[in-house]
Image 1 (spheres, rainbow, N blue to C red):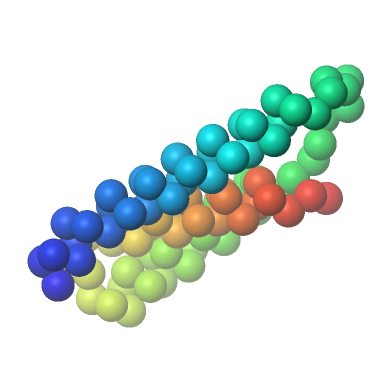
Image 2 (cartoon, rainbow, N blue to C red):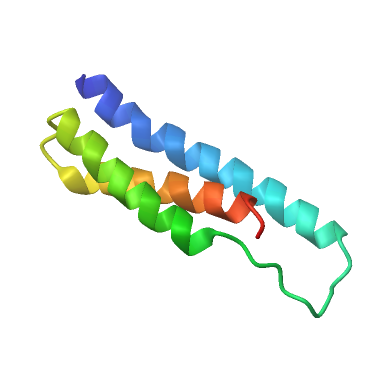
Length: 84
């Protein structure tokens, strides 16, 4: 369990960095438009925070903030990928 706590943040940050680089390259290739795309970013973040807190409590984690942060991060990524 201790090794999982040490490796998990590194894995999550690596996944987020790869996703952000991929998204940035994809957006750089598109032409600029005046219209901004609407996404479910805030909804994904709030649902992710709630689910992360629930999972943190269910797994009896010592620090609930870790579950909340990971849930918020995953919810943000899902919300950014979903368009209105």
